[in-house]
Image 1 (cartoon, rainbow, N blue to C red):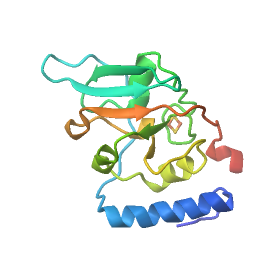
Image 2 (cartoon, helix red, strand yellow):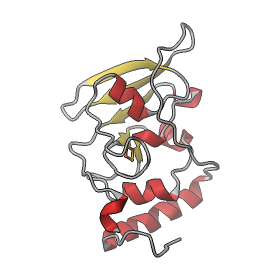
Image 3 (tube, protein in one colour):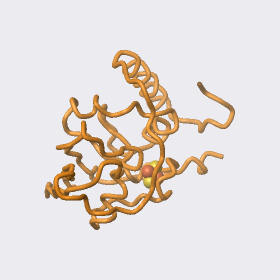
Length: 161
Ligand code: FES
């Protein structure tokens, strides 16, 4: 699991990584998400999926989106405050979102090791944290609500090389 190129993480991050691994193993997740950083097109009538972003001030923004759009692209296309410093390549944690309903979190494909490593560096990490660039909208996620953390930390994997 840990290779020579793995960043040196603080002890609490290692413990959390271990806890997440245990958590994952008991949840029966089956697949990993793949990276897609495309542009957003409006959904066709009748094919809308809805996602709500809640910003750090508590303002809710409900958006109609297409299946396959990822949360980073959606947020940026609607000028929401999500930096996405690495451009969606799973190499920072500035697209950190907190899934508000654990039921929705459980419907998402399992975060892969790269995402977990970056999440360990995220400010305000929770058990339902994800990287927005790694979460694609699906029919199962229709009605998803995510909260943007109060702040993000722009640490990238390259900072540890
Ligand atoms: S934009 Fe950098 S990890 Fe998502």
